[in-house]
Image (cartoon, one colour):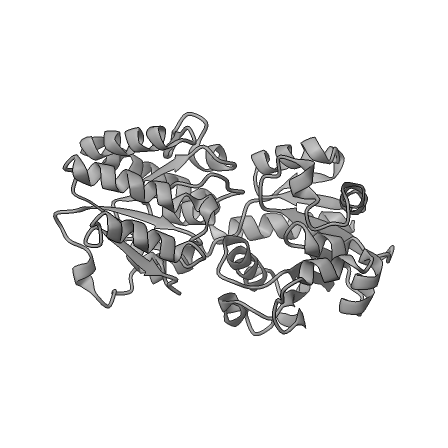
Length: 373
């Protein structure tokens, strides 16, 4: 049996955290002995780990200045301190802090893997949680394999760290059957969704990079022009109060609903006519993948991974330039054309099959087997 360790900052409500839980829960427990370790014992996804998955953590919670404190110690010292068992494969499931720790593994018997989930465009950004750019290069160069969640994410990483021979693209794991089953659950307030409205859905942490402020501004413009849109946003985050103020200031409380974090977002998503990703940056959007599985038409800004999800020629959804006007024009276009909306609903269902759970899990398991060989 292959012993595998996944190290991640926490098991919060973000996309990477959710995807990791999906992956380990569905991996073959007869072939892989899996441990998930979090730097901080935090996050709603802790309770979603299957019983056979071992869970460990380094700190009870995050604290002010922790990034600085961790930099005081070498990667080797940190690895020895926190990971005192032998594993066949040790994995940093995110960039930065956890990559620095896993890079400290000096055992020749262990294979080291780093998972890259986001686009890194500058060395300053990539080296932010390392002591220096030189240390970032040294750490990433020590890995046996660099896994990226999309072709775009891999290209951006390899421009900074030319390690192409170690690169591998593996798509995120989503619980496709579970998502479809959860979508059948009844919502507590059916009156949330009115028949005479065009319902737009967006999902993600309420942080600036997700672009929810611009989505709200576009919504306001569409309502002023007479389009009966209602936007539902699922998620929590630091921008929540700013978004609430923007909604209330413009008198849109009746047509923009912040649903907060929902353990089952799918029962809300299934009621919507259109999914919108307004992000300024993504790795490979978990939320867009889930929308496709549910057969919801997608409009998205041009960020990493979208061509892989929706096709380079908008075959399975609509990709627009990453600016407010392009997103507004695309929404206005599809709101005017019910046939176009129905077309992309069918295309979403077709594309969603590409990301079925067992398919993505088997590809990752095969990668681990080949790594050990």
